[in-house]
Length: 102
Image (cartoon, rainbow, N blue to C red; front, side, top):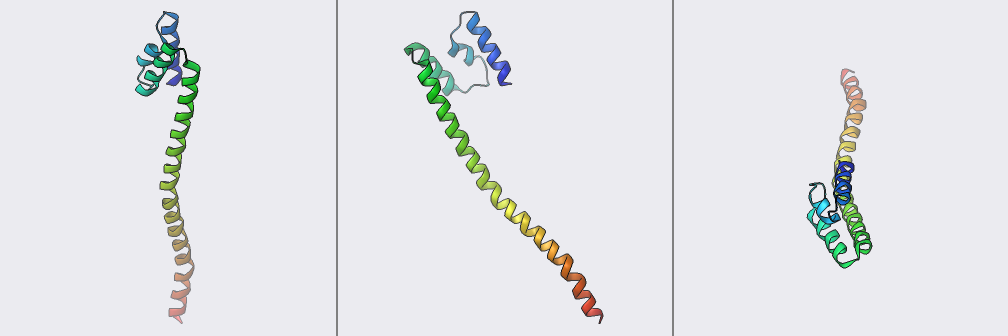
């Protein structure tokens, strides 16, 4: 999906369009990135701005990943607790029923 969007952007650049307008045609890139690339082209600071955007998106992905891990950890603890409970019950219930049979 990203590859197709980049190929379309490349084709737009070859046709003489700006990088910002070529990226804007794709729904894959968000408006913040498109606006920042356009500003970078106009000011001649495209490299600096793309580096800043890369850092921004890297931080965003770290925050997202940390939130995901924070949500998965309690779920895993609950699942492990349930499995331990089933294991304990499968060991002790037959022992209790044998004790009752005596």
